[in-house]
Image (cartoon, rainbow, N blue to C red):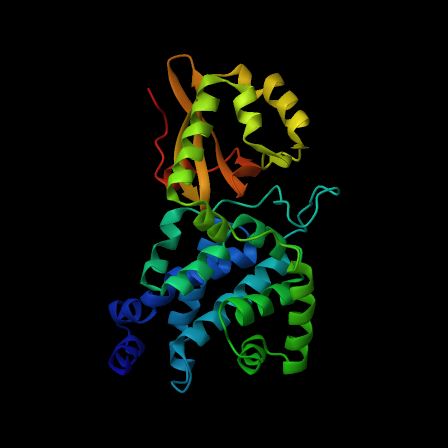
Amino acid sequence: MRDLLDAARDGDQNAFGQLVGPWRGELHAHCYRMLGSDAEADDAVQETLMRAWSGLHRYEDRGSLRAWLYKIATNRCLTLIEKRSKRELPTDLDASFEAEWLEPYPPSRLEWTARLSPEGRVVALETVELAFVASLQHLSALQRAVLLLRDVLAFAAREVAELLGTSVAAVNSALHRARAVLSSVQPSQQETLRKLGKSAERDLVRRYVAAWEAGDVDAIVAMLADDAKYSMPPLLQWFSGRERIRRFLLDGPLREKWRFLPVRANGQLAFGTYLWDHDRYVPGGLDVIVVRGSEIVEVVSFLEADFASFGLPEEIS
């Protein structure tokens, strides 16, 4: 690493790329957790690396390069949160509900987790799940940063205080408050799907696709939990309970013909949905699914998702 650092300081951009490359994926996931937006996370990481490149001569090779990069990235995210206008949430949604501006996270962003231990990969995936990221947005920016740096990234309280330019007491106080807010977050989808098993998961996916493509509202509703929720970001409209969802589906979506393609988003079950438009199927939304046992408890249909980033075709014949 010392040779790469010296070369980068001498202006070798390839050396700099090798130096920071191992951390780029996890930095992006960190910024996504902080900001709730894939696009904003991309911007934050780009600026983080630009600032690291221009400030490399100020980096003191005594601590961890990873910690230094996280310091830049976290403070950049804090600045972005402070500058952007306050985003409105539906007033009657609880903290587990996704904000209408939250963006789904493509599986390609999580390829870096393959090099982690099985336990580390589970943590990485659990902490980009929709419910977790949405709940983070209900924390103050400082609480959000502290919880992620301490509980997700395992920095010590002293390290976090140094990264954020605050005291250990302030870090511990923010962490206590943040944990209290997140204590009600629903169980991890990683654990739920593991318990469900691959065979039952494939069967659930098959039945859900078949029900939608057949326009069978009874089959769709039968797969839902009694307290299921259905939302459609960026719209504020949402539905709760089987009967309300049934009425909504009959009055709207099931008037169309659909095709569904299974995919992953935020480490969860998801579907690229396509509706018939004259002579082809065109994108309708990216549906991210939350399951409890073998029942679907939430559908978040992102109406403006970038299908290409999820490896989904722009149309189906």
